[in-house]
Structures are given as C-alpha cells and as structure tokens.
Image (cartoon, rainbow, N blue to C red):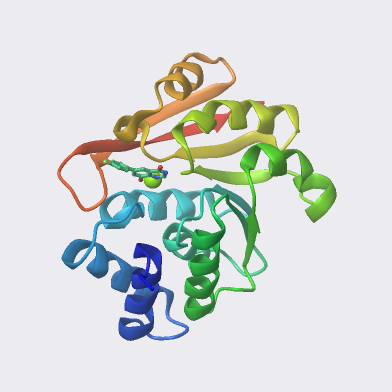
Length: 214
Ligand SMILES: O=c1[nH]cnc2c(O)cc(-c3ccc(F)cc3)cc12
Ligand SMILES: [Mg+2]
C-alpha cells in the first residue's frame, strides 16, 4: 500500500538522523524537504527565528498548536531548560503517529506531551487535565482560521499571563488576516513582525511575535 509523505519523512529521519540527536533530526527533515518532497514544517529559515525567540523567552511551559510531524516540536524542546515542558496539539491522527516516532527518535519524549484532538476542544481542558497554570510561550502553527478564536479562548481560559509570548507562523502565506488585524490593534498585545520566507521556497512569509500585556 502507498506510503504517505509524513511516513516517508519518518523513514528519512530513521535513515539519516542519529537517535538521541535532535539537531540531526531537524537536519534530516530539512534535507528531505529540500531534496525530495516539500512539506509544511516551519523549516530552517523561519526555524532560526523560532530558535531565537525560544532562547530569549527561556520558557518553562510551552504550548504548540499544530504538531504536524514534530519538526518544530523537536526544535523547541531541544532548547528548553531542564524540567521545562511543551504540550503540542495535533488534530490529524496519522500526523500524530509519525510525530510521536520522530519525537522518540530525537530522544525528547520526556519534555513533550503530544495530545491528539482539536485545539478548540482541548484548550479549555488543559488546566484541569494537565495541571497547567499559564504558558510562557505559545507557538501557533495549526490552521489559519483557528489562530484568532484559539487566542481568544486562551485569554478566556486564563492560560496567558502578563508577558506571555505568542509566536504565529504563516501570517503572510497562507495568511491569517483576521488574527493579524486583532493582535496588531488590541491594546492587550504588543506585536512585532519577522519577515522571512515560506519554508523551502522564496515566497514571502513571516512570523508575528506578540507579548500579552495582561
Ligand atoms: O496548514 C498549515 N498549517 C501550518 N503551517 C503551514 C505552513 O507552514 C504552510 C502551509 C502551506 C503554505 C503554502 C502552500 F501552498 C500550502 C501549504 C500550510 C500550513
Ligand atoms: Mg506553518
């Protein structure tokens, strides 16, 4: 039977990355996407911006919306301080299954909690189910039409504190106009745009970094 692109990506990680070495996992995926098949990982160019935000925030608790195959999950988790944790939500069970194996190969299973299901269903349950207080960093990389409703949901559920950072991928391509309009005009956020390119291409894209002011 026909394999899927995430399964072929996982095979590339098994064949080219060193078990327990997150950087080699990231490199193997980027090589696969440049040389074999494009896939919607944040990629290396925007990934470097992600890395710089993670190291600046040095978060104890991270929420990632949209795991896909775990590329950014591994990239973030490999930079977290000891005892820090990342919760990542993935809607698609096939993607989640691949992500679990890529995360395991990177040796980061202890730092990462992958939850299968919709962000809209799970965000209101994170406090009671996982004893979460607030998130220091939220990485939005799931579905463009969910960025704004999920941000409002996180506010309502008390998951953000003064100083929490939201980092959103794809604000230009595919584009999240309603989210940008809200976050850039809300007095409760201070936003900054990081111009870059759509992963593995020369098409413009960028990340929007926003600080929640409380
Ligand atoms: O749906 C997406 N979720 C999260 N990240 C994405 C991402 O980085 C890129 C794209 C994407 C961009 C251009 C294109 F022609 C086809 C798909 C989609 C998502
Ligand atoms: Mg993306």
